[in-house]
View (tube, rainbow, N blue to C red):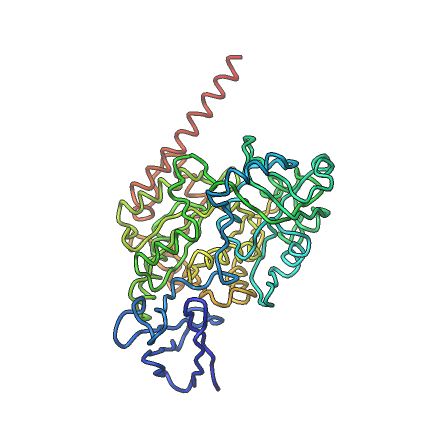
Amino acid sequence: MSLTIKLHVTTSYLNLNLNTSKNTTKVANFKVKLRTKPIYHCDPLLSVVSNTSAMHASALPGQPAIRSSLIDPDGGALVDLVVPESKKASKALEAESLPKVNLTKVDLEWVHVISEGWASPLRGFMREDQYLQSLHFNSLRTQDGSLVNMSLPIVLAIDDETKERIGSSPNVGLLGPNGDLIGILSSIEIYKHNKEERIARTWGSTAPGLPYVEEAITPAGNWLIGGDLEVLEHIKYNDGLDHYRLSPQQLRKEFDRRQADAVFAFQLRNPVHNGHALLMNDTRRRLLEMGYKNPILLLHPLGGFTKPDDVPLDVRMEQHSKVLEDGVLDPETTIVGIFPSPMHYAGPTEVQWHAKARINAGANFYIVGRDPAGMGHPTEKRDLYDPDHGKKVLSMAPGLEKLNILPFRVAAYDNVEKKMAFFDPSRAKDFLFISGTKMRAFAKSGENPPDGFMCPGGWKVLVNYYESLQTEEASQQQAVLST
């Protein structure tokens, strides 16, 4: 029995044929160790250690260093659609002269995503053939015949009036929600927006109450417009958080600067509690045991659209900073950034997008937990998705083969040890599961959670947020009563 293993060497592969009857094989001054029990069955992890130096500094004669933290982006090169400074003035004049398409806030978030290369090799809003591939196959076929994952359609909707205004123009200008000129969409294609089909295939449900559907699809137009995107400037929100919005290119440079030989990404849209920290710290420990010298954590909260009852981004970022200040996570081995994508709450379909985008950012390990990108059913008392399907789908998804999937171990509050710990079924009665709903209830009431659930500084941020909400609600009620 033989096993073929691909080691990523910048843009090319070094292919090794290993006989699995041996645990260690020496090839060209490298030692390749196989774990007898891979972290996830469908994607065995390798520890590649140079005989003479650390991985990030090692290289074969005449070849560049192997840097596992910088796996190739989808399509081989990161997309960057921001117009060069030398062409900005002429492109702005061109955009002014074109028929205009007005962008919503969510549309602008997608412009941000596309323009920085998170969706590489996609170079604009999807034309119909790309849309159908994404909708039906969760992937795109590139010009060289290779397959890349693309589980969410990234599309721009327009209404009948806008379609008529565009007429036969091959290009359109894009206006932001505030009326500012954002960029150009060229060589456009307009096609029908079948909302019911899109919703059913993306969410597996057409139940009322799906947050992204109500925000971005139901009120949208009945046409989709695709084309090549050019953006006049990097998208900024001027909300005091732009310095956290590191592009894939910036993240890759930072991983290089820190000499990372592995990057493990953790996506979240909730505050970080000590159970999360336990998982992240344990992942780093496991990677060190496998032979990696400097694994770096990418703590990567989602920064686009979220449903109204989620904790707002600015509050989450303040809470995350307290987690680092309190030493729950190590700032020296952690990078905190904002992932600009909107949230769909589309479960196993969406988690593929979250993982694919982190490949483009340079992460080669992705942590996945229970019910990733899921939510409660909007009309029934149950989860919308099977909580185990996300990690199973990631292990099989086309186009994600080069990404190592790291499933969560279940963490809960240990009443005996008085801290968050990995769940032990043999003493299940000793553990308390504190859901996001229960955590919010604690914070709203001002009641403290059990000691060791969350760092004090982080918890105070949440309590202050919910107190401010209650003060605001009381003021609004008083205003209503006084009118």
